[in-house]
Length: 577
Image 1 (cartoon, rainbow, N blue to C red):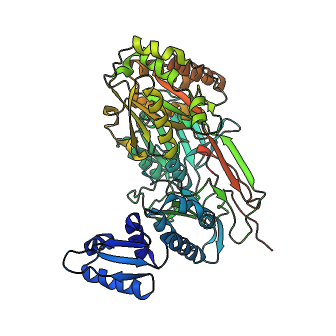
Image 2: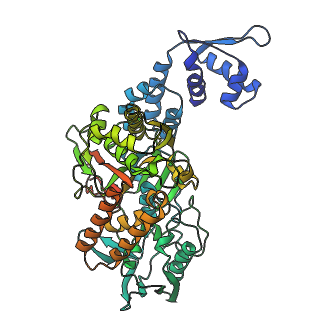
Image 3: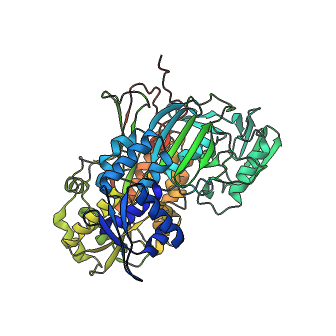
């Protein structure tokens, strides 16, 4: 039994009856991407190994038959266990891509999960295997606006300075010191000496100039970070000066953004051969796997892990992430980590299409229609943390009155036309969208549900298709910078869906935000902007997601950083004596 055989079995399974199936030879030529001669050779090979009895079709064009010895369910179970025993991760992933009943995969999830978590072998050292449920979009810092990809860039590169969340201040990183002019228009940074890129070239000021120039001469949705820069120059090998078109006291916080990690000037950027100064370097990237290896010459403490592997597993194939240790008993007394995500899920309105969405009464009706507590109850979920803000510690309960929906719709310009509702193609997002469709139908609203991949957020035509969209925002460890970015990043929904009048008002508040002398003042501005969004129903705040993860108790130094992700630089496990 091998993957070629399993591919055929998965293809033919939907038409099987009592372990017998009819087929025509040209079908297997397409399934196996081979010639008629090779199909016959493979059928003979599998028959001789006892997997089935082959009954050729008699006469031209007549179907052949296969009589299988074991059920497909039994074969899947046997094959998966064989692959796990041989630690053939790549083959397991391939198998999960086949058209196999989801229930079977769920039954095997415990066995499959033993491939994940911490592993140790002589060749690779300490390895953490983790799961991602989708294809990566892009790892080019110019265009990355998705949390996982930003997190990976953070592992591969370093910024000039870092934001210290606990102290609420900026601390040195690639730059060990900096000075700023009295008018906040000229910033000078002094670089550490001896910092190495992954290809062993030393970092200098020219690499900093190259990184920012690359941004300035691109069509990046993150261009707001560099728009104020009129000149960046390397005064010496280890001194860099930025000149801004206008004063910006918040500019230093901009420089902590992961996408502004410094790149080498001597080689063209290639996201499949990522070169930075970060604690991990890119070892391998394929459609199924991304592997990071610890950078032994990192200028700060080397990571305690030797390698981290991210494997693409179809959504729903495995339960929630559980990090165990290879060779140790699965612990019943796991350490559970639960945290409310800093960010929120939303239902955003598109003000660039001439639909009923433009009507305040219609938006108010949708506000009362989308009762998150009712949604979660009917979807069989735990009670949600309802949102009225980006930040869960600011959010307050929002009152919903289903009794006013009909009257608001009658007052609105809505006349039964189709309203295009979009969501990401994740199971939970689809469930939420379908709930809204059902709820809308009760009041005569014709929502048409469309799904989209995460890559579609980079599609320039999205605004021409969407009326409402279910989406989310997640903060980095600098919450206030994340709030600012959500309105300035051209790939995100606020900048794309709000109209010019509302954005102009918000932009004026954000300009004051940059000049605020205290965090408390910036929070007051955030509250004012969010009150404006709610009063105009520019979007609906829905809920704050909760992340739950469990770890084997021997896994040490579990800390979380930006976007609620694990800090890979500190994880370790003690050696068993």
